[in-house]
Image (cartoon, rainbow, N blue to C red; front, side, top):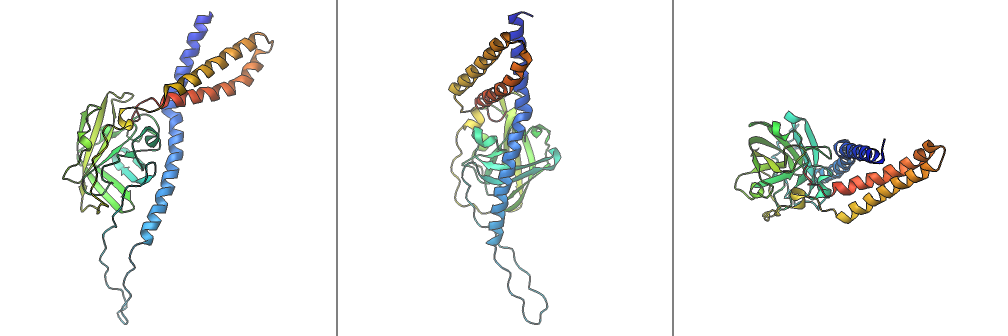
Length: 293
């Protein structure tokens, strides 16, 4: 095989490895982040339960405590970016994920992200959540399968809230009107469409069933087209640096192997560091991809 042929084969293998990393490797990182978010949320839930008012004492001779009227959940402000917001469950598509605060690239790698500036799930107004479609656990991979009437359940420190799907639509990436404030109590879910593309946005909206939880304050206007919707914030310098390092290491291994009788030993020892550099190259490229893919 000629040098050109070997080069083309090598490039093809690297492309396949990158696709495998995007589809499965990123899911491992997301799974770890989900464990961390769920642990954070468990602590929040314990604290919220600890602040609940105690039931009134039993009246002497009555034999039972009088009925207790449930008090409303206390107002809750949005947590810091990157922290747990709640749990979202959609039975029809088997979704059960922790929601993170924020929709930047780093946030959406952890799971579905709550748009800063919109109400928290369960609170009055239009609460919006974005999620990946094909990478980092692909929480919203089956969002297109939802139909009117399907149920969405969100659990936060303020309680458990149920929404019914009422519509889905496709919009341009620049259209942020779907996450704008509204008078109704809604939950808006967004992701990229079609799969493996960031050409457009799939939007699914649901209506809250029951009474909303009290907000901490009037929600501010949502951020306009955050990097989580429009694209990654990673730098090209990192991509070039790791790419050059990977190419240099590959060429170095090839040159050394040519001068040795036991070429297999050179490749055996050199492959692990090459794969490590290649992994960092993939990570750098991923930072440039739209976060909802």
